[in-house]
Image 1 (spheres, rainbow, N blue to C red):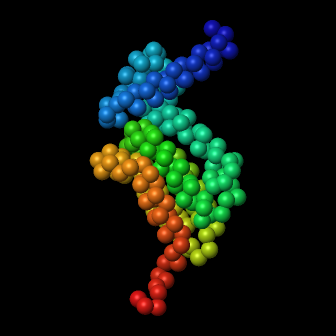
Image 2: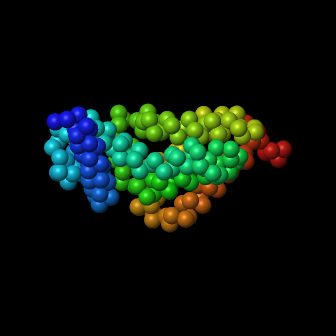
Image 3: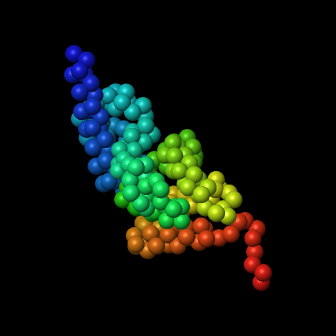
Length: 202
């Protein structure tokens, strides 16, 4: 088979797999029920093709997650305010968290499956490290904030997929209410003084 045709076949197979996985995770009640065999069958490819392209189930989940997240990443890296560079941190931090929350609300099953796969800790995942690094860098621009590293972790904890699933699924918190609650939380964190600072009346 000519090399160019092989590459085209590989690209076509990858797109078919991502599309099939996208559909399966959107329809499933429990993310763990979707197997690599299910995805291969839905995509019309062999399991060997699937494993060669993505390595394992976690690799497939990461690829699908990144494909869906691409528009958000582009807006964050080069878009206009409030997500893009150059936005004051007091506006950009809540906007970044809102974008991440909305993404996870729109992709609840996939986000939950990804954070539950990995090597036992979602904090070691590449996508988490990227968001944490971005938030930390923006928080470093906030006057009076002395621990941007921990603050970034604390803010991101409010967007964990298991919490989003619990609030949206079990507690049935409306989308706009969840967004407003997160925005209020982030605003309070940004407006608070350095750790240990107390008012004269305390």
